[in-house]
Image (cartoon, rainbow, N blue to C red; front, side, top):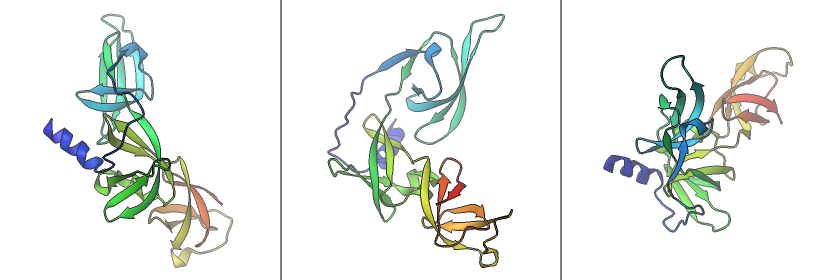
Length: 212
């Protein structure tokens, strides 16, 4: 639809000379082949399979129950498919780009081989941007020559720039405090962690992992 096309166009607004490295065709697979991580096309949109369960009831036809996430808007739904039917596979592929800088409300990624830039609008990127640091390598996900999502490294190293003054300390015992990182993100850290120190954070959960 026009609305769908407009949204995808706004998500990836530059890199006009980009030439995809993968062929874009229509790929079919059986619902019996669905597994976690499979990319499928449903109602004209790309979805990633998060969960699946093959069900063979005592009566009636077998089916596959799935939970899928929309790559573009992040929504998650449950969808059931009859066993053995043909499903269109979404040809989603990823390319590694380096986040180089932020220009206003746009995040600029560079292909280190061609030096071409791809600009993504902040409003379309969700809260994952709070972990982005200049020089960080990320995977941009493409579908039909458009960027539909991006993947952060699972773990990132970031510096603490602020903590509550009343909670500073070097105690190795229990207790936690909120800490602001160089990207503006706030995480909960042990009391012994202080301003100026680097920590490792799990970007999937936003949780402190260790002090560097």
